[in-house]
Length: 421
Ligand code: NAD
Image (tube, rainbow, N blue to C red; front, top):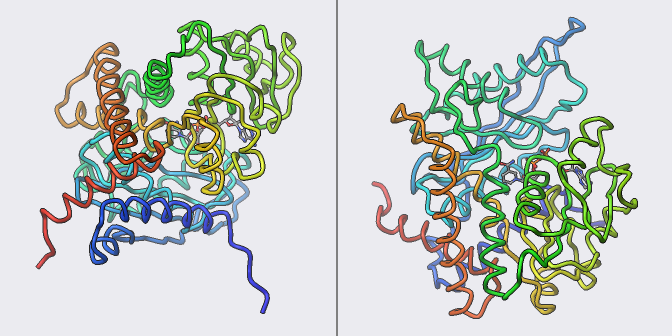
């Protein structure tokens, strides 16, 4: 009988589960707790109509998955993409549970998604889709129960529509129902930069441990969106020489160094970094294999595989993207002494400042940007050190160590709460 190939979402789900089981083995969790932590708490699938600009009605499918809420309200972004599936949302929701536990913010994990092609939709259609999707999943939402945030192809404007729709139903304004909002609606200073800033804090810790002098180091960055472009700027500010950057149209390479501010200007004018005139063109594949000290994948999942892993020549790889490394590539990187800072640690700065935003909303306070960044640094460096200590003690890779820390925290909370009734 012919075996059906797994979808990308199914593979992602398998990879997330595999990491969970490795951690559960290390922690000697019994099978009942394992089953409890493995399955999502609840999953909502909604089909809903949207009036399109041409007068037709189109029906979309959307999901909201709450993976685990043992340690606090469910937290996780909403993705608009043509490839969204329940399996992908499920994997991303589980990742959120572990990510929140690694940095020890009092949230559980969730994720949402709508299968659509936002690049082909007008702003009015996107607003209609967002408001109806919010209404459909509102049985889950609330500042104490489930708090969405932006993810791929959703942004601060999308969050503003969600906040408004939810507030209209309630009859009063509820800023704490979403994070990643515009500053004017209660968004936090420093949230936009938080993922990249948190990632750079972890790079600084790894560099210190390896004795790598950042002003003499080189970096390669894949993806020049929110996470990638800001990571490039922050590393450049620390004196790191950025030798290559890329986006979906290709990369730009200059061994003498690239000024990320000038690349951003170029992308603003032309829509891509690939044609930056002060550098040579390079493919995304070649870019990943450039010899460098710091590699930051900040675009898509599944880009480091068993095929290219043996050719990765970096000392530190900081996963700003979610799931950039396949499970088969991981042991190859470990054997080759690549210091991998795993996604659930490296990009947790985003959810950390989302947590700060939620706290500010609940307390009706505003923190200064310095205050946000200082608190972010404390949490990222402390979490990095906790993961590193487990890695040293258990003689495992940083990724396994991060899962051991995260799964251990959620398991402890589960045992303390007990089984209801
Ligand atoms: P974004 O949409 O702002 O940027 C994505 C970038 O990747 C763009 O420059 C795009 O051109 C590029 N890209 C797309 N396809 C590519 C390809 N095939 N090859 C190379 N580059 C390609 O998204 P973002 O918010 O920066 O997110 C990037 C990654 O970081 C995602 O994996 C996301 O889940 C993860 N992440 C983001 C946040 C956050 O707060 N923004 C938090 C945690 C994790």
